[in-house]
Image 1: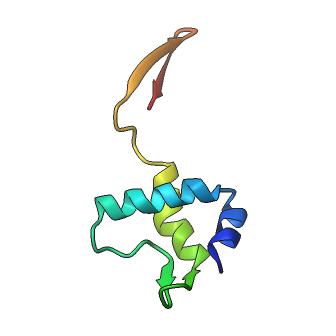
Image 2: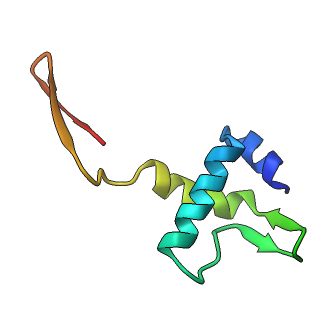
Length: 80
């Protein structure tokens, strides 16, 4: 699967995906992005199941890093 197809299937913009890849490479130097298979310098294939299970779900449901407590109608709400 190509990157454009992967983004379309998961409802992610390509710009968002590129920023996530750059962030991943900064935080994990030398590690391979989950689901990414570099065939040669111009061809990269993606496994959507591995990407979904090992990157997207933990990314979307991560614990809040810098919580800000906001009170709305007496309820405590945490925002990032």
